[in-house]
Image (cartoon, rainbow, N blue to C red; front, side, top):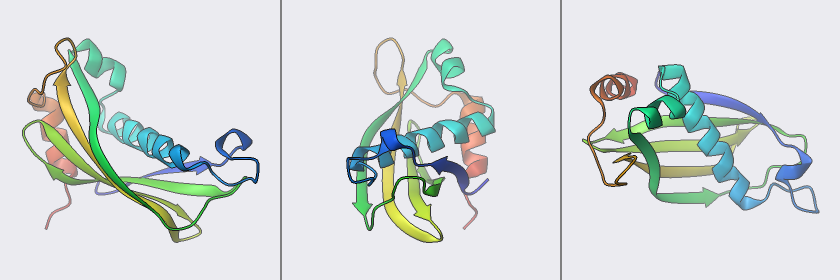
Length: 136
């Protein structure tokens, strides 16, 4: 699975008074895509927390190209850019009708849910993440 795609419809609650998607909502759409991508791999957030694992955004870089509008049907992507012992870089985009509206790289850290300190990926999750990296 090299790129996961989540369809998202823009609702009134996602927009400002002019019907334009509020900038922070793109990040929410991307969060949903990452969560659904993990679910598709067989790893739900609740199950990870029960195992003592929490995934947190460490940093992100985002570029907005053009706005999405009320009732648009978007494609929100999530793909693995780089995997290390306790972090993962996602490459993400929000697209409408083939055009990229917003793109981001999001660095996720794997942390111990109690101590909130970095920890290595659980072996099963690490194997699934490794298999999701596109071959070069």
